[in-house]
Image: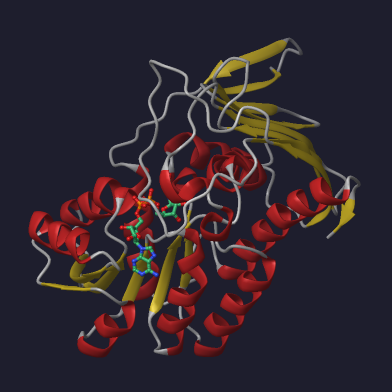
Length: 347
Ligand SMILES: NC(=O)c1ccc[n+]([C@@H]2O[C@H](COP(=O)([O-])OP(=O)(O)OC[C@H]3O[C@@H](n4cnc5c(N)ncnc54)[C@H](O)[C@@H]3O)[C@@H](O)[C@H]2O)c1
């Protein structure tokens, strides 16, 4: 198998806890360089993972290294500039979620990627999780019939990440784009990715920068002039061209129970992901509830990286191409626009 020469951009948490360990395990790629605006973090990651070169800018890395693809693991405000720079130089792009700060940036990314004809994958690991893949397979086999309803939630009672995540100018939003995006995409994927048409949503900031004791937080690095000016909770309804609707909830902090749920319902059957269970009727006409066991030999991030490299080697479309990533961004934009305007928005 030809090894794909990767340049990783970002040496923070997701890079060093998920992407770099997955490359270390995977035979089909070689991380030839890493870039981070923090020299200390770039150097530490290069030493830990045996990466030959490190840089403090993506431009310097692309000027000096023979790289085929970039893997973008930087703050959300860096996704569009890094992806556009890489695409212009003919590099394939894998980019962490959310795609961009807003729809405008997402469309600029799409333009650059299409103009250069490179491959693109939005890195949402849920698409590579065994349960979600099995549920999507059931959708494709027609096991759910006509899918018309979904419900999804990622609720943390107290779980606001620190650092740049709460800073609007760096993150583009709070729990909706940080964790809600995982569950919204999980449901949307299993619903067959229908075209979004309308959104009605609300966001709030009621608990904010809590001082609750005995709780843990994902440690994001601080960004310049770090604020807490995003929402801490969001909820609403996303409508699709085929008449289906998806209800979502996302919170970093709420006075309610922690939970993650995804449910998709069709005319013949339905599914929940936690745990993966099919709801329908059996051949004799009785109700059927079947918990489905699946194997997950590798982490979702390993599967994601292997898939991205296969798509480059075999010159085939990825499972989360730029057009679909832009549609997901349209949903996120619709949520914020609707919340701001206090009414339903047409996408
Ligand atoms: N897939 C998941 O489940 C998951 C989980 C957490 C974070 N993420 C995503 O991963 C990305 C990074 O999050 P994190 O938790 O690793 O944050 P982090 O703060 O730990 O790391 C980000 C790193 O990017 C660097 N950086 C920022 N802008 C840069 C630029 N323009 N060029 C080079 N380096 C730059 C920072 O110095 C920092 O070291 C975000 O987009 C986030 O949404 C995904």
